[in-house]
Length: 136
Image (cartoon, rainbow, N blue to C red; front, side):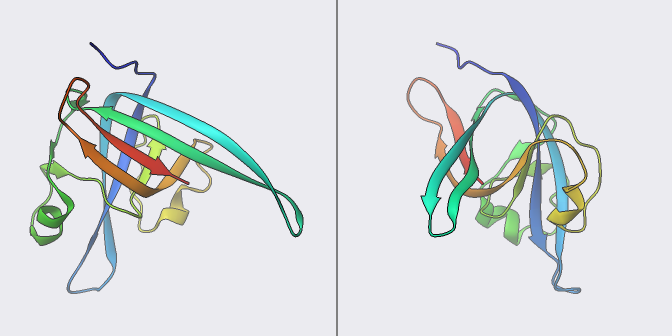
């Protein structure tokens, strides 16, 4: 069995710099993932509310130049240049994105779909081994 894929993504992992106390952001391109945007519309006190809900699935065998490690290991490691992870508040951009960012707002003028990771799970067991990301 093979997972249906329709996109490449760039994931921006954040890591706190102990000296500056700011987040550093490292981007990793992952090729061959499933990327879906669901536009949810709900009625609220002030009329219609619209929000994009992102569903992203990364097959374990997706093409990537870095090695996945869990968020705890990523946070503890000094040099993460060979690794990528998935954490809440990371940013996922649809497509290949080569810009360096200091903060997520730096992506606002990109004209690409992107989201903040709000949930994720490691589903690397069973038939279709993958990571699942939910975002807004």
